[in-house]
Length: 112
Length: 256
Image (cartoon, rainbow over all chains, first blue to last red; front, side, top):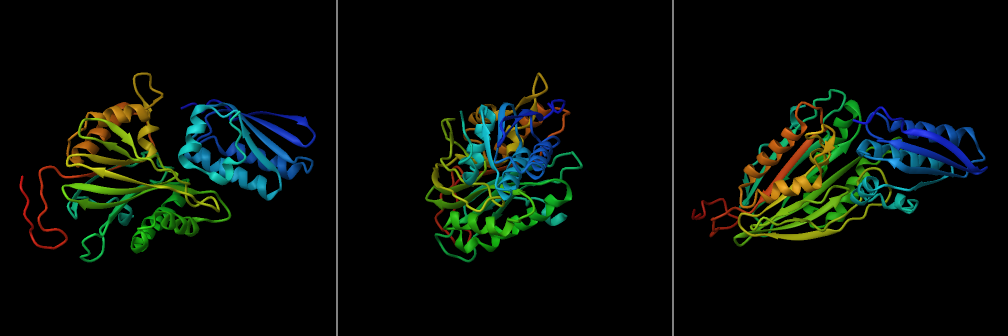
């Protein structure tokens, strides 16, 4: 298990309304909650933020618990009127989304 | 908790079923995988048996509650199982809560004996598609996709129809098999390809031998490491049996 990696590896502000959170490692049963906690803190702590991008380039394996947390994160952001977008998804994450088909979320998934 | 254990399986309405369930040994994770076979009610000749295999995602003791709920619901919905999308949408509504994004993924299989073979209608709700093992060893993925249930307002799914000749098997499985970590380097996934290879070698085997073989290979792969729940359900068209009396409780005539 790759639990030694931090899942939330950093955050930058490309512009005042956008927060880009870099994810790294394997968001799974033991580590995925970090993503939700980070997004929750930002959307509630900073009203300037209108969009959050989850940079998934460094994400490897994501299990179903990781997916549950991503779905919850999507919901928390939506409730706060913040647009959540996942970008640079790797093959394992794309496959997970293909199998589970969270259609209403996939609209905000960019497979760039 | 006894009621949550998977059922012992046998032949139902001229179709063979066999299942295996390997609970995770991680005490914090309550078993979320399940399978059930619901025989059609009554003596209707063209009635379908509903087989369900699924995986409920949740932490700790919480997971056992929706597992019980999601296992009871398809049985109640059996009369409408002709419409898989409707069943998945009703399940979605029954499981959806506002305070978390816990969800389940599952496969619905409506199964019917058809002459010497078996006809299946398969629908996935966010679950890996079942694999069909042909008599010649070819392994095919059933062409069904759908949304996971219990977390999102909208659920879509497509139903695929599959026909099995005698000796052919359709395997429903949870991602506990394909996502099992192990192997010679200790941290590789068992993966889709290895599962398909294992199944190719199971061509022509009876249902019980297929699930036994896959479970054994996964156990060898995992070794002494921890793993998630693993559930397997084989639906097999029996070999060398010609049903001459269908649907009755009488003995019928079987030729070996």
